[in-house]
Amino acid sequence: MTEDLRNAIARRAARLLPDGAYVNLGIGLPTLVANYIPPDREIIFHSENGLLGLGPAPDESNFDPEMINAGKTPVTLLKGGAIFHHNDAFLMIRGGHLDYALLGAFQVSSRGDLANWATLGDNKAPAVGGAMDLAAGAREVWALMEHVTRTGAPRILDTCTYPLTAAGVVTRIFTDLATITINDGLIVEEMADGVTFDYLQSVTGAPLRVR
Amino acid sequence: MINKIVPTLDAAIDGIEDGATVLVGGFGEIGTPNLLLGALLRRGTRNLTIVTNNAGIGDAGIAALLREGAVRKIVCSYPRSAGSIWFEEVYARGELELELVPQGTLSERIRAGGAGVGGFYVRTGVGTALAEGKETREIDGQTYLLEQPIHADVAFIRAHSADRWGNLVYHASARNFGPVMAPAGRLTIAEVARVVPLGDLNPEHIVTPGIFVDRVWSENHD
Image (cartoon, helix red, strand yellow):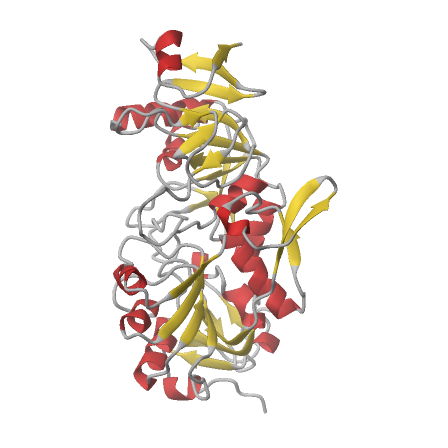
């Protein structure tokens, strides 16, 4: 997926975050969302390693080697930002205090099942991090992903074939082709320029409908 | 007079035996007590169980203990990171037991160990491969998993400043697991950047009260 398409996904998700929301951005594609928050909105970003109020990347004047985000990348805190320990960071996640978790995904099912922590058939050690806590705990979980795999296979399916992160949690999917809401099945909210419904259905592994 | 400040790294890790379960603070390399870990490696302590978030990066700290075969088991949430070469090699050789725990559950299990809580129920992991073998229970119409506390022989944490009573303050996101792990070690050792006179830390700002800390080693000695 090109950088332009990744940014387009992030821009569409950013537009739908309401003013005042507390949001956790997963590693990878979701982190781009921070670049596209409309200027009339204050969004408070949370990081699992104990930060609220994440700001932009530092420059030489405000770089602190011990101030990092979940992806272990240097960050800054905005005015009003807060630092707390790991247990409080996950209390916020598990206790339903976060309005949104925006997560990358390998697969999402039409029931909102999320698979984003392990694939099948490689012998590497598994790694889960905070994915299961975020998926189970945030009030809303949005999945940001490429619509199909590198070989063209659908990632949106009736049933996930990869190991689940959590069942029935995803409420919206943002891909390079469309924005889809999950509410008793898959409802197409928006399609990218040049994408037709028939084409979208042909690369989606579960029935779509329009609102 | 109470003085938890120890003069040397060897004194800081004195008494840690082969086979110990060691909590290690840090998230990535931030807040990781690599000087204490290095001392443990030099002393040749073996057969360790390490409880930590990541599994070491590069050649220092946990990565060095893994490289030298000093670790029998690792309990963590995210062992594979860019640069976690020693974990990957030792794991691929089948020489390391891995217990993978969701990050928030890991933190809460450590908290429970230090808090005298015998277990707790969470929704994290329900219906996933990590729920296998765990007791489930319906509470208010939702399914929860029973999770067990983690008890440890030793906790290694890193903080910014300490006083001789063992009160600690942290810096930026290096706080992470430190305040959670400090109560959970039967022996808790803090590696700090500096020691300040008793009374210099504002009681309103102390994050880890000294009751949880047994020894303090400062990398900057006057």
